[in-house]
Length: 498
Image (tube, rainbow, N blue to C red; front, side, top):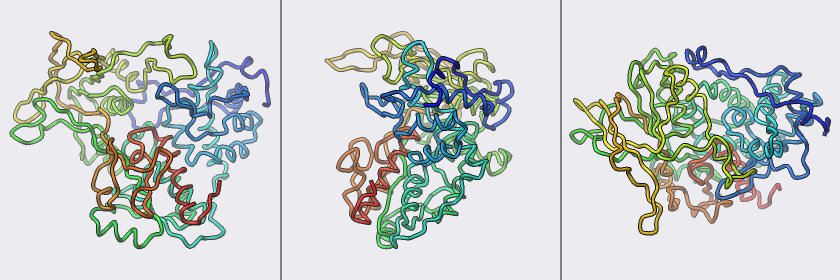
């Protein structure tokens, strides 16, 4: 540890934010970095703990705290503090395939487990330090193509180019295998490209990494949807291993009266990720000029779901000029500070005011989230959404089971021209799994012998990411991709590189 009093000498200082008044007029990233000298001081706050919980990824009460990638956080914080930027990048990249992604979109499980956050002190700015290290590495020229000196002669197909698929491809290519990634969309990135808005993850960041991977030998095939047994058989016959990394995109539907009109879907109701994709695609294709998305301009928008995707819908709707935006969340409002039964280092179940809520407070003078509330009925006119009836809900014990129940007399009418469903996912879409003949588990995910096993019931076919573990974080998808790649490498070569 370079500065043993760093955590006493320096207070936590986060990267800045462009004010909501300025940022809601653009889809550009809005975090502003600290100066190099300030960032090095922030790295000096890392205590190099005897037991660094930040990199532990331990499960407590059903939730993980600490980094799933087991990043060498104290090591690269120390190198950053000393100005050894190449050393910091080298240690970071030992465990993390794409720090430029996680440093932008990860909720920083590492920081929630930081020992400095256990008392009155504030956690080390691990998330921002990571971003500085990787961006400095790209800017300085440290990030150069590293083409394998030898090739194994083995070929691997990766179906899906989201974070898990890219991690599989990157790892196996570095091991000397020839990797081809098949993506059904017109751009590489999966959830990173079309599920996360541009102001959280600029798509040039993805393109930069893809170009690096291409230069290192990874091949990408776009607009290629693997449907049917014939397409699946071609892959299994042409490649020595296949990794299915197709995500968990089967969205949970809104099953209430009014979602259909005369047997047709009511106009104005969309799944959140589908809508976010249409907006991002239009932004990238034409700067939104083509209008190939449902525009919320001057409309009352209702978002069902109070999580990260709902927040992304709020921020996107505001940027597109909505008249109002309301997020409905079935769960009660979390406490502002940790409750007695939620001590450190557990994941903090506390209230978070993310960028979308901040922007709503600026634009409309209120937090968009309404807790313990859901949609009871959709009102329609001429086949279009024209309003909703909401109802408050709470969990009660009914016949010995915890059951979500309506609160009698709590109904309320709200105006609505658009409803975006951000209520989570039910698992992977079936058709790719069916094409390869792999078994699906109880949660709609591909079944394997266990959580730490990635081989399916079909010879030479593996799976990783949300398709394997269910809806989760980008950092978990990358972790799964790396672990799956190790298993594939062992399968191909007959030994492990561990």
